[in-house]
Structure formats: C-alpha cells, structure tokens
Image 1 (cartoon, rainbow, N blue to C red):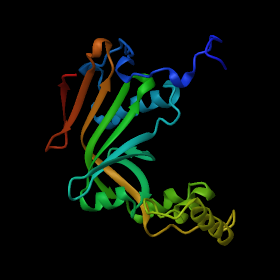
Image 2 (cartoon, rainbow, N blue to C red; image 1 turned 120 degrees about the vertical axis):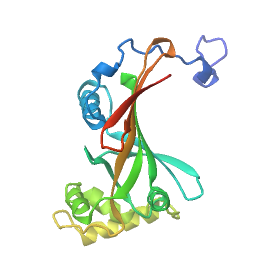
Image 3 (cartoon, rainbow, N blue to C red; image 1 turned 90 degrees about the vertical axis):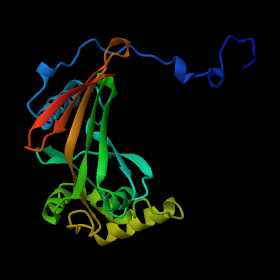
Length: 228
C-alpha cells in the first residue's frame, strides 16, 4: 500500500503504557461486607469470578517463590482445591517452584481477576500434600494430562520440541487410553497455609479498597485496612 491511501500502518501506531488508563468500578468493599474468615470470603469472590466475572480461568493463580538465596520467580498455575486448611496446586517437585519451595516454603499467591477489578493476594507457607491426596487428584486428570506429567521434566532444558513429543508418544504407546497411568514419584501437590490474605477491590481515582486478614495466635483473624 502507498503512503497516500489513507490506511495507517498498525505497526507504526505507538502503544504507550503510561497513557493506558481505566477507571475502576465504584462498588466498594467495606469491613462489614467481609465473611468471618478469609477462606469464606475467598469462596464468595471465587464463585462470582467463576459464574459472572468474565474470566477465562478464574482458578489461574500467580505463584511467587524465592530460593535459598532470595532470588524470586513467578509463574501461573491452576488452583485445584481450597478449604480451611489452605490453597492447593499441583506440580513437578523437580521444577523450579518445587525446588524453591523445598529450600524456602514461604510463598505468595495472586489471583488477578482484572475484568472484575479485583485481586486476592495470599501470603503463607507451602507444604507437600500427602501421596493419597495427590493420587486421588491425579486420577481425575484427563489421560493426556497424566501422560504429560510423566513426559515433562518441568523446568529442565531440552534440545527441542521433538524431544518432548517423542517422550509423550512413547508413554502413549505404553499406557494407551483406558489403561491406568501410575502417579509420577516426583509429582504432587502443595498446600499453601495462609498467614495473611488481602482482598483488593478497584475504586475510582485509584482510591482502592484493600482489606487484609491476618492470622492471630489463637487461630482467629484480624482485619486491617491498607492504604491504596
């Protein structure tokens, strides 16, 4: 196309992040709105996120860890269970997150529910789930996902995609559809026991509501309001 055809080259349009602004919702979050515990409050928000939040995967959560030297890393995983004992996700224990948590069990979880102008941030300690619990969840995974847990040496360097595909193909031949796949010994769950849980509600003019539950020694929870 010529320069005078009136069509703007999309590659020439600048995208300035400093100029990208959204006005958040006016609906607020007050102390009187909160449930007695952070897990109860999370259940409320999670139900809304899953039913009418406009989110593709409302259980997607950013897990941030740090190794023994304090070097941080973050990645997105899928939450698979939550209750009064904590928040559970599954992974390869030899992955970077698995190695980090073996050295330093302190962890942060972030649920970024942007379409709802909400976030939930969990700070706590991660511990491995028991093998029975891990096996019970593994049995619910699709057959292909079970094979994938064996095929992937998560976070390890590989020569190329062909190496991964070949590993999967070999496993598919060994364990065809309908045949039980054993649980990999280096694969399982982590349960994050919360010590603090923040509920963040976007408000106009960046004056957001931030209410944080903090665990008390007696097992109860203290609620704090944080400045935005």
